[in-house]
Image 1 (cartoon, chains in turn purple, yellow):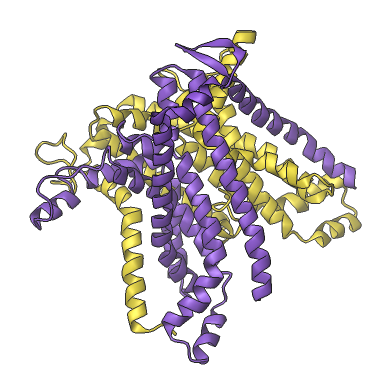
Image 2 (image 1 turned 60 degrees about the vertical axis):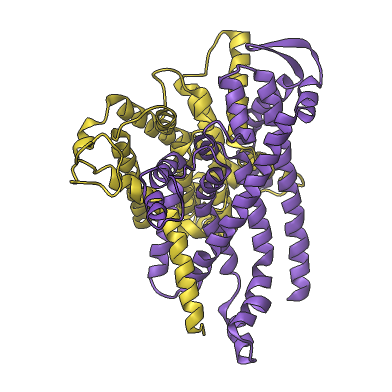
Length: 284
Length: 277
């Protein structure tokens, strides 16, 4: 019996391993050759691309901006995602499924279309600018293209649908009976949030937040379109280095730095899950 | 028992989130109907609603849409051929390195798509240097990349379904005299079908929406729809793009309705297709 199932596993495993290892190996190896520009590379293995990355303030600044906008976007996404997840999870009517359907559809639509919509909303004669101008809150039309705020909003749109579904799966694990129990014992609603809902959801928030942060770090499309070439993040820099400067090895080294950071965050969240799970068992 | 203030706060907070979430799509669909004065301008809310831009969608956009649909459908099919035996083999067998094997199958999810994009491009260049075969800018090259990003979605949902699978169903089938293949075909596959459908849907949609991977694998005249849109937005565009985007949004909505009919939204959410990411 055992061997029969392993036989099922072997062919797809070989195919996947070839695709994963093959593609990753080639670009990682390329990143260790000196970049001579125009697609040419040196012949000796060297760390010169990485030395350049970690000594050049331009690259370091890009790295820092990537982390900064990703962290802000992840926090704001959690903030906007939580109420939807909580309300839908506690809803008893059919409306809940309808509300979730809206979220699921939004995750299907390509981010390019959503960014398109954002650009229309924030355009010079768009809804937001007109309202703010009429209220006298701003003096001239504000553009989100090429600003860090714009990139943050784009990243939020890239992750919010996913994060609502993720938070929803966290909130449904907290039974409403716990809330009732706390209230019967005299806790106010505020206290129920402080002592029951938030502590029980916290592990999910931490892990979910890290996953969202990771998605933002690797997000290309929204950052490229809303950054408008003025705000660069690592994924945008990778694409521009290939397409505009034709520097494959440099791009490969930037991509590898990105890959390693993302994997480190993943490992960290994996450890966090383990820790929090065992901690939660003690609480329960 | 929620208090009144709490209900109001949650309602406003939720409403704000929904407006934030859905407004770009609503605006795109609304603006696509603009037909008034300076009709080539992009305007929301639209003046004098008309469908004029829908008849002016250039053929390149339809070609790009067709390519995207083709690539997404074939990539999802191939991904299913990889993911179904992989999930069955992994959940059913018992060995020590299971965790390592699972990580390999899930790896494409951990790798940012832009990194996979440049990785596949450089892999294709290497293949070209050694064998003269150019995969970048061809259908097989594009498919390979999309299979890579689509497989983990199917793998994840099928594993999730299999872990809840009742083995007695298969035992019953064997004891009633059905052979190994008959059991697989008549019992096992039908029970994991919801996992295949919902994972397949996510895989299809991820492939259909992809920019960062495809952008490296396109060639002039060989562009997927999201990449076509991406380039259009970097340059000048006219509202016909809004019209084709609206068609795509409606298509996504239709896909959801199909899934709702076939497996039900609850199965889709429970099988963790979304959280596979």
